[in-house]
Amino acid sequence: MTRNFFVGGNWKMNGSLSQVNSLVEILNNASVPSNTEVVVAPPAIYIDRVRQAVKKEIEVAAQNCYYKASGAFTGEISPEQLKDMGINWVIIGHSERREIFGESDDFVGAKTQYALSAGLGVIACIGEKLDERESGKTEEVCFRQLKAIAEHVKDWSHVVVAYEPVWAIGTGKVATPEQAQETHAALRKWLAENVSKEAANNTRILYGGSVNGKNAAELGKKEDIDGFLVGGASLKPEFADIIAASSQ
Image 1 (cartoon, rainbow, N blue to C red):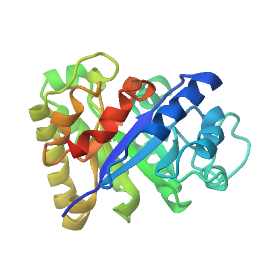
Image 2 (cartoon, one colour; image 1 turned 135 degrees about the horizontal axis):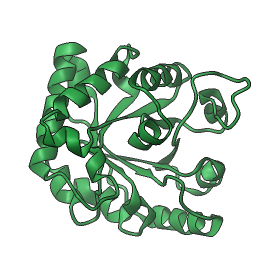
Image 3 (cartoon, rainbow, N blue to C red; image 1 turned 180 degrees about the horizontal axis):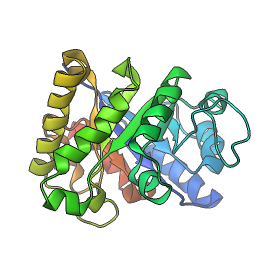
């Protein structure tokens, strides 16, 4: 099974209008390989600006959404509102949402289910902290998080899993290609044994955690690494190099 490469750019709470315009220019000049899907997630206030300005080869995602269609949920955005704006993807369960805003595994699963039911594709994030890796709990933690998502998902065709070791996000520390491949292979095996072989074969599993233009090509060559969810480097010109990683 050949899975199309997937490169996501998570801009987090960064950028001004002028910076966003510059980033869009970089994206519009980037060469996107035919086997690669590119999705960028600007801050919510800039989503429509990016969607209208970026070339059609590149999709736009939200960084988060709620699990209700409407109502008294100040500060939240519904999947229906995102679809109304022409947005087809959302990131759910990022470690910063889990850590800073207290989102539980079950909450992440419920949001994933609702976003899918509203027609969004979901980039579902999982990953362990440094102390969990050092105590040999990487698989235990990732499997627990993935199980909470799987319990809410019937159709995996619109789910992309992003494995982001928390200790490597924004720290400059990177899992070696071998470490990343080992975890990705374990996640794919879990999907085969607990969901279906079809889901395991077809679901793209991304690596995130200090991915940059220098290490992307080597990481991307690993059998079970189907792309990246990029943070800081997605705000720099080198993001174009990461997009091209699958063709190197």
